[in-house]
View (cartoon, rainbow, N blue to C red):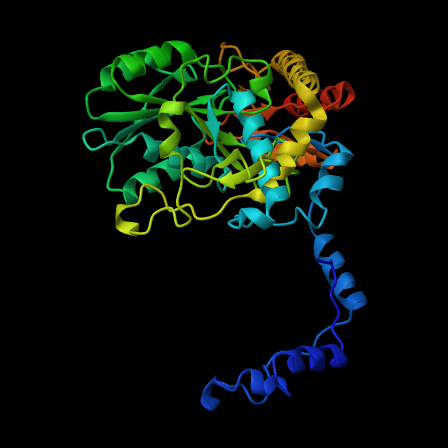
Length: 440
């Protein structure tokens, strides 16, 4: 396969001759004449490569690209080693299609197998699938995994990402299953409220770790409470934070899910992203999507196959527990190359820098009058502050300095984020602008 395949008239003639035809028209002779377009498409003529490049460059120039970013909320700017794009841009990897034919797909299958292995190492879980569309759909699929005949109700922490909550709600509605929101208390999931909501109809509880406000939840205590009630614990995980905090397995999770964008994928104005899913061995046969397994061929050599699911996962749509029909193979390969390039120590170093820079930034911002920290709990690399001035004035001032500020919240607060790419100089500049605006 090549990036650019040309075809000459001689090559066309050779291909037609090979199948016993003389013209392209003969190739489509079975198509009824009334369906054949005789005068061409009524669209403008094509542009040259140079003209297209100029047009696309002009359109791209309208985008505002900030050199400094302090916004996260589910999509994060991290350092991406050069080897990541060097490997995943190779023509042999550029596909998102499920490799059904194992005998000619060993390379792609192995890359997915390595990805699954790394996700299991990162989460501490027993098995991972070949990825789903994004973190939100992974959470919704996990909720479906946990449902049983008499247990169909899903409880979701209100401290989870609003978009994730919305997607879970939509999936539950489609399955005619109930979803209830667990209240929050001081930015954390209200454990007392959860205790009162757990009954014999609850199938699963979704908890984000860290949560939408950046806070670290008491996942172990919540896990014990959920299991005592006979339900399953689903943990939404930030994969970078997973290098420092306890794994979902250590917290007792039955299913671990999350958004894999942080693992080597640029922000890219919203995608494509990567939903990862991992589960305990007891939940393995309920995992949606594709699972690549390791086996041996007839000669005893190491080989890889799709396993545990039929090619068409659920034939009867109305009885399906999932309708995921493909996988994010290219994004999964990207994540695998990133994790391999970073290694355990590199990932831990990146996470440590996120943690330390966010805490330095939080201390500096909260020292400004009116910008106090809203919550007292422990946090990873995101935190919420109050904002004593109008969001519009603040963000206009930041934009003049080339800074994309945190996410403005509807209740007036701001959700800030720092990663390893933010320097002390950038943080100090941010703080100076906030102080200047607040003093006007």
